[in-house]
Image (tube, rainbow, N blue to C red; front, top):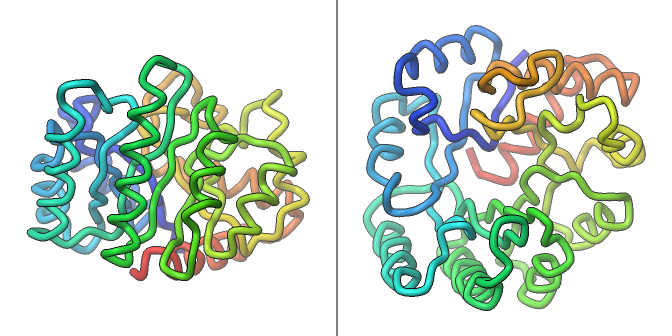
Length: 257
């Protein structure tokens, strides 16, 4: 079985003591490719260095996270994104989007940064990885408005209901990113995903965050994609090999890997 972790922050300081072991353990578990979303210019070069050290397994994205959209630095950060897209190879624009959990006061400039980066993605013909914490309605309205044949992507860490899932599916070229929340006892996501065709799903960990059961409370790692896949296989009543094959192909189709 071969899996792809489509969203993992391997450059995080949470992995500074054993980063290479974490990558090795993921590969041994069948997670042979790991896609790294950027956060801001603070992390860009360490992320790129890590991917160049592991070119067959780690692949970078470029983007400005909504929580790092700040008055006074946004224009500089977006210029950095634009400049790096001209200098290096990336598989996507991400992690971008909106976050109304931590700070609602920056919503206007978050939307501005989101729109700008969507247009960059269309220009460079790259998919987008979308962060939508407490902001699904606001974010998908922007995507629906700007959507065309040049736009594709994933709604990262999808935890919505079936109505929201169907809005994503109706965009045509977008996937639902399914992670550890699927394994949480009372999340309700299992009931939603049971009704969604596998052709719309890709797997992710968001490590070091959102560790799946039964490892909640511990640091998340890419190797736990297997646990998420096992839960998905249980929900769908299909073999885990089918989960691996389908989600891996979906990820390849989206990210052109």
